[in-house]
Length: 258
Image 1 (cartoon, one colour):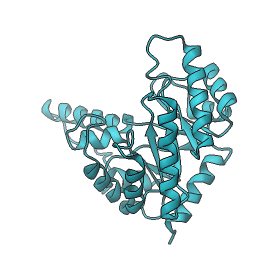
Image 2: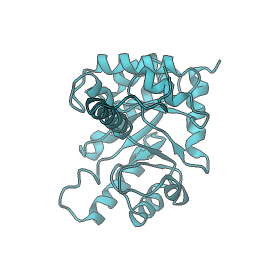
Image 3: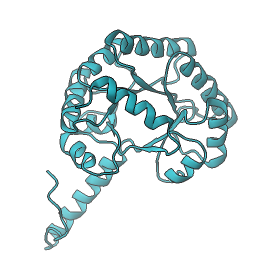
Image 4: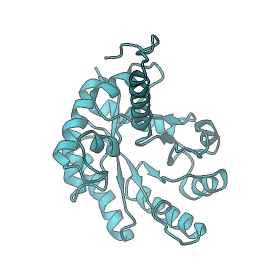
């Protein structure tokens, strides 16, 4: 059975590999087991937005105790697979949040900067790295910068430059990757990879984004899908309910996955 250190090292290797790491985000134990059952699954990533929605909270407003309880259940559900958790902005004390997440079996996390001042954001990264070291786990931080998604009306060139500056600073402070969410075309992605580093950039697969294979060719390390897998599942649920209300039946192709 893999130790927590083994899982953290495995996750780090997956990020460094030539093949992009594809993680399909989960939000509870059954969604985690469903994804973990696929032979292609190498790691599990939670979606903070989706976990919050599961409990009736808005994104970013879920109590940390509730979030960590579900994250722990996901870790238990997937066995030896490494789990990286979306922990919003660190919930006030990023170092303590990471310490508690490690206690639940987590080996990596996304923590967002929300465009706070650079020095403050670097200090958050340092606190997370220090927490991992104190717990004896080579914690894999996917440090998120909102330089593009919160860039507002400023020119895209300024947002790209800001993302690169922040990304380099986060890596220097001990982060493993830099997560730059947004719909990134090939040109923007190339600039980010050139500026931050090959296999050091993490992206999200949104409608209108490049494919994972295209991002891989540009040197991106990881692609995740945030709340979208849950939305796909809920779309299917609503569609089958509408079919039933119209006199239909549950499709014969439905599989038992729990």
